Length: 262
Image 1 (tube, rainbow, N blue to C red):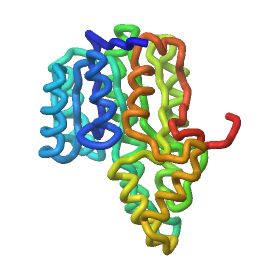
Image 2: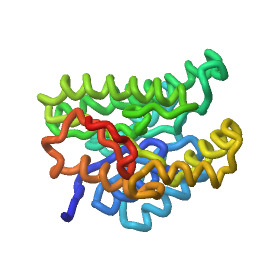
Image 3: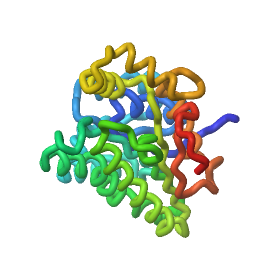
Image 4: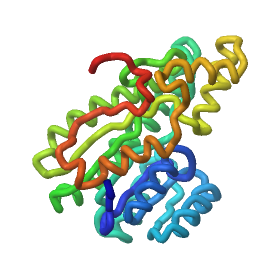
């Protein structure tokens, strides 16, 4: 299957490292032009330079997705450069781990902005162009915690589930305009975020980090962790014309960890 996205432009959040970078690389390999954003300029510039070497046109915009004025700037510069963003990949760093008793109000409010409102507000600014051209893709990177909550991830379990509810409702509203809204749910995947969660779980459970990783591998029938590119491959497919009748779905990429039938 040769997926091509020539002539399409994608905006990928959190694309300087980890899953976001893998997604940006996959989209670029398929021929898409890119808008990349992340909070840290140095790592963003380095990531963008690497993707330019692949032959893709890249606009890199340092952005804190919890700040509405920076989202405004991101959307304005992206639209000025490319006219319309065809593919939006909503991806932001996960909120802190912690149990209910350990999380104060300010952590909850920041998690709302980071995990839910960043997706809502970036989409709000780019959706009109997709609807006008009767073609668009919005793909939200969430977590398998929306299918099966993970102990110690109170904020992620709560707010990523809110993203799913918003996305499913939006899919119904903009489907007639041929704009498709889907969610992808990585399981335990080898990123810096996973290392942070492993360190937190180690302290919480009194186990070594190596033991935490070993337990996570056992959760998957494949007995291993996922690779960022394995998630990116699904995103590239959903962004393409080959996925033209897939809408309103929430798809896990977890090696079969989630055992529910639906």
